[in-house]
Image 1 (cartoon, one colour):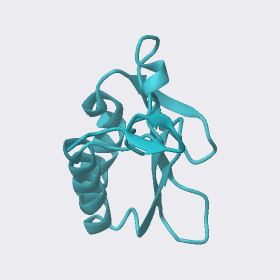
Image 2 (cartoon, helix red, strand yellow):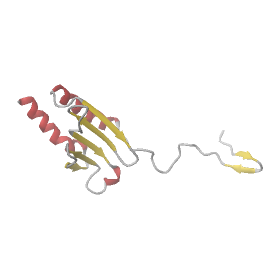
Image 3 (tube, helix red, strand yellow):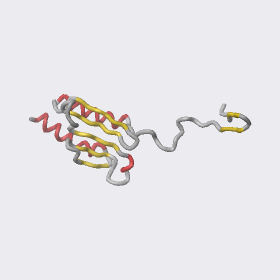
Image 4 (cartoon, helix red, strand yellow):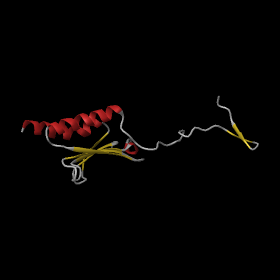
Length: 123
């Protein structure tokens, strides 16, 4: 029963700890993560990538793919919902941090990596 809790004569309404107005961190949906991990698995099979890392903060969710674990990421996919209304919430970053592609759809942003995979498999 959701009844007020009384303490010392004053009435304090019940408030759930998880009821906040802003989310704690940005994350990937199941479909987004499945798409990214599918590409990662195919790049591993082609011998392009060997390791990955994920980062989740209040502002962004990032997936970084590495050729070797001790290097900087060869590719990084970022999701920034705050940019949804502007150039798109998805960004593909290259090895040196340059923006390779921005967009509103994940599939379009992953397209350059898909093309690289096809080229790697053909060679």
